[in-house]
Image 1 (tube, rainbow, N blue to C red):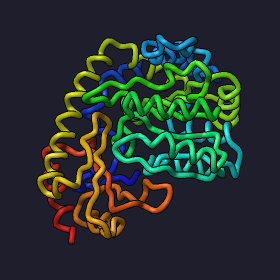
Image 2 (image 1 turned 135 degrees about the vertical axis):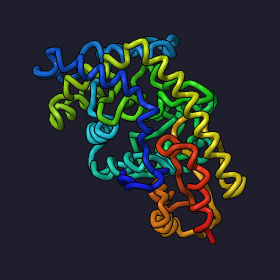
Image 3 (image 1 turned 60 degrees about the vertical axis):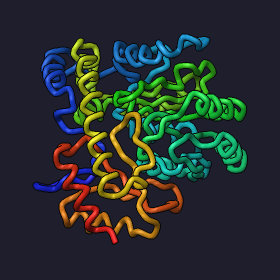
Image 4 (image 1 turned 180 degrees about the horizontal axis):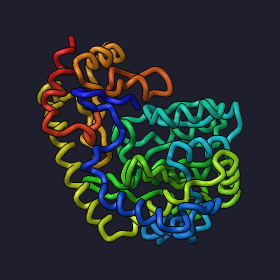
Length: 369
């Protein structure tokens, strides 16, 4: 979350550069929204009906096999994904309860869980999904009722669950009768494949789905959504009402304007090509300057590369020295619920200009022993 000063190369930020955002659509949408009643009236508690329907419809195409695909009544609008996670953890668990998480995983989810008083139980993952047997053991031993995961372009690893992995994980979730918190943060950032949310085929309410527009539409449009069923949704809605009452109607209206504009789909097509070029260039520089073994996989989407350096490298120290050399990156220690299993770092390819990737990686390489 640190701001990069003048002349500093930002490979740490999770927010795409302006040229990767639908800037024209956002500005026009905000102007139009300001002329409507949403600029002066309180928004409905759950969210604008048209936006609720949009989020539900996004799950419907892949959910044709579900007994009852999600509807607008299953959606609640939130001020971004982070607030959604905080509400879910508070609403569906009590202080002292366990929550199972992949390791490594999103630092914000760990922080939200701990702020809710939950005990994080890690299960290992790398380029693949966690082993279903490990998940079953962790749920059974801890008594956890929640499993937080990122099946698509996970932050930070970039891993993407296969069909078999999805089926294995869902089988455990259903057998245990627990909730899978599906964080679909990178839904709009597919490069070599598209995202098919697990929630689309969940007819029994075991999957609680989170999606945010903050990174793909604009950091200024703090709008996200939770899709859940029955009592779980009611508890999450109650928590959201107590915490924020409602989400800004003008921001919701602007978001809906962008998402329903014909230019949105054209933007996503251009974005895919831009992200591919950036990802491939940064991967080329990493392999050429840090070694082929530094990069475990080239992610099929998302915004980040996850690197492993030689064991024993002081990653926080390397990050501090790199900052003095004008390059910011995210040390891997921050992404582990428990002790890190090696010397890792995350590089984001969506913020800095790709023509300076070579110099950025060179500065990091010069600092290595």
